[in-house]
Amino acid sequence: MKYFLGVDIGTTSSKAVAFSESGKVIANYSSPYDMCHPQPGWSEQDAEIILRAAITSINKVVEELAPALPEFISFSAAMHSLIAIDENGNLLTNCIIWADNRSDVIAQKLKETKEGYEFYHSSGVPIHSMSPLCKLLWLRENDAKIFDTAFKFIGIKEYIFYKLFNDFTVDTSLASATGLLNLNSLQWDDTILEYIGIKASQLSTVVSTKSIYYYNNTFPGLSLNGKIPFVIGASDGALSNLGTGATTGNAMAITIGTSGAARLVVTSPITDSKMRTFCYHLKDGLYIAGGATNNGAVVLQWVKESLLQTTEDYDQLYELAETVAPGSDHLLFLPYILGERAPIWNANAKGVYFGLNKEHTKAHLLRASLEGVIFSMYSIVQILEEKATITELHASGGFAKSGLWVQMLADVANIKVIVSDTIESSALGAVMLGAEALKVETRFTNTILSTYEPDLTNHELYKKQFKKFERLYDLLKGEMINEGQENNG
Image 1 (spheres, rainbow, N blue to C red):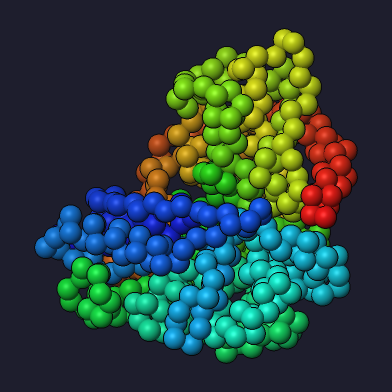
Image 2 (image 1 turned 90 degrees about the vertical axis):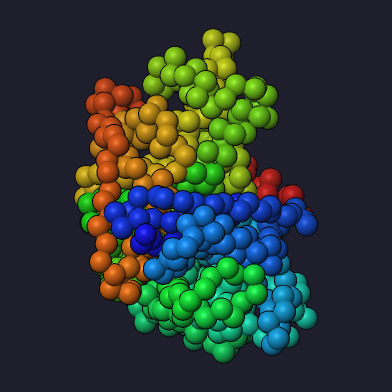
């Protein structure tokens, strides 16, 4: 039996997914792990736990499919992580992840400077606390001992590859999400590094997303026999576009899981004059332009568990929300319960229900929350529509299982939405990239499960609601920022 293994190192778990030659999932295993918050605004994880989770997931799938071995193993990983290590490879910090906001004040100050503007347009990474650029500036100002003595500053996939192959390398896709890489040269940007006060030698060597490493039974605990090729792969967001088939200029990938993102494949680096969107490398001459939101399905989870405190399952909640007409009878919800990234880049943004009256019910609260998430996502989509003519949206993530939620996206954006059978899109994208790197012939197919056409009547209604949504945030933005400044002292 011939199979290919994709490993997706995510925020909540590491998954190993085995695909057949036609791209069908034949086995998978997920090893979950937790996030820790040692101080308000901090979000960290234990890099050793993530390493063991990745190894466990690989072992479980390999053992299930034994005696067959994977033709190759290719990797996807979450972006924006930062780890400091010493010259012996020992961890000096936890893995500081994308959700960490400790550098928010530093990021806001840098964003308003000439340097911040230039750094964004050089790197394609918005000046925000998610960025390793801002995390490094925070370390320089607040933990000088680690900053001054660290041998390397790396990300989580780099740590795993170091443990497996004793080499510090980073693919251009993940490197381009650090805020330290020049998007045109695809090499570390000397001007940015000088501003931070670090040297290129303190970072990993930048390599192609198709770089191949040969595993030869050297890492204790990894159950592999034989010389298995490993492909370094790319970032989870970029690979999701590959996996869903959203790779043409008129197709956009929309992913809503715990968080969410809208991504468009482009053939040259694209930045935004208002610094609202990102641009990362995918492979070869392809890039990903887009924006990420903090507030995806986590909003529905919050409504269910904290606001409504109900034991109803999500399918029941969707059914209840569907009893309310589009527009939720003029009830609006700003979904910024975790602050926000694109396009407003305001870590102090807050969630707000607006327009409540005694006629509104639990069903209205539910539907308005779902619509709020879609409005937030559409605020990214409309910016990307300035760059290209979008004729189809490819939906993935948990929200794609809800016909109600996907139809909302089609109606708000007035664009056809396609849902395929590619559930593990990032892992599949990693395998597709690995097959290309190793010149392995495959017969991957992307089966369309459903297509959602926009309802023009609903679109006209949502267009008015969306304008109100934008005005509401603009009116409240100052209060949110003031509150954030007060809380930060």
